[in-house]
Image 1 (cartoon, one colour):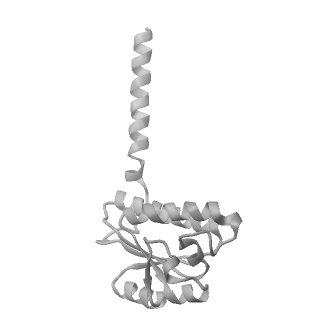
Image 2 (cartoon, rainbow, N blue to C red):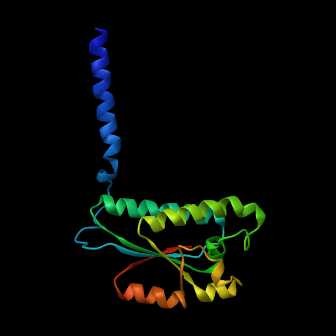
Image 3 (cartoon, rainbow, N blue to C red):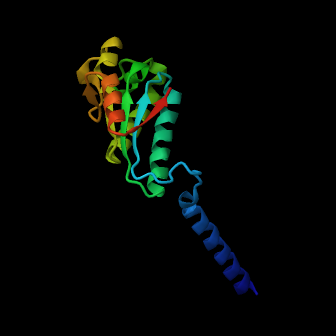
Length: 165
């Protein structure tokens, strides 16, 4: 009898595991992706609150993962401007000391997103307004002269525009 109970429990565990593992494939996006052939996205990131910024970057990764699960090979650009610019820099400068742990988490997330193939573009105008030296940005970040021009260009190429505050 013990053997039978163990076998049933193992089968139930396997079913639960398979359901959890395949959960992404069963996501419901309604009709949003019906007839969609490509999924290219421009995320406009400009929030200066580090906790919210970290959350937004996680949402970007989750969105990408769900698009992949839906069968797409999305191209993603994260456009950085405004107060968010301060958190895409190398050293302890540009943010209050209390925000340094979150800044390190954000830098780690940027590194991960770049290894996943994301482009991360920093608006040079925003950098100047925040008085950030160009050389101080993370190496994964590419500077563009004008983030608005980039937004316009990517939208003209068919990228979906997603504001992130």
